[in-house]
Length: 217
Ligand code: SAH
Image (cartoon, rainbow, N blue to C red; front, top):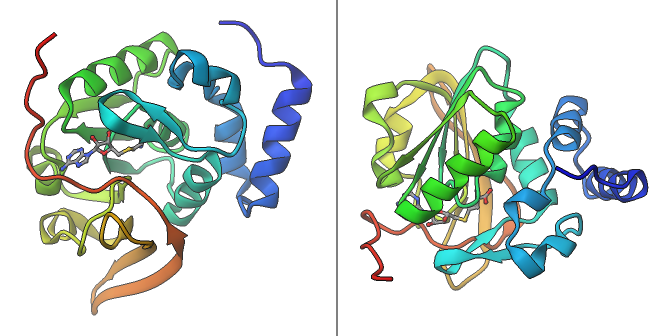
């Protein structure tokens, strides 16, 4: 892979810092994971701008500042097992791979899951497993998780996922109707119950039930 020009990387890191990504480990992880391999053709030239980019199957690669802030809010440690719902391109999973012990990422579009796994493999990332499935159900076989992140908006906090979160665990997710402004929330599971913290307004594609039907080529 061609190296990213130093000037471009400096601007990218500065943009992330200015937008509120202050956690050194998150910034380091984002410096190590190039974003252009996750962008499609003509959009690659915009990979280091703070923009959401279209990807196949009508989905989007999230804004890097939002990826940074969600990762920061998730407070991932090196021994953590993390579940991501909504693999998309695999970019968020790649950033998490630098901070966690193991990342499981679930995507309802088979083609996206396949291509994300290939991109991650090309980058030499070995601690992420991408699964085609309905993320709303979580991943029972690997539960419980230290951290759970949703990168598609749910109308409410999915109870299946809360059940698969360890006590002391954190879940970060956008909540709200798909065509309206959504709120990014951080849920902490304590022995006494659930703590909710509202972080900021965001806009994500909706969490959709079921595995996407195969598209005929
Ligand atoms: N995290 C991604 C961007 C997410 S876009 C990245 O870094 O590129 C949101 C993704 O969630 C889309 O790919 C969409 O197909 C997926 N999605 C929506 N509902 C889902 C569900 N129930 N289970 C799994 N994936 C889902």
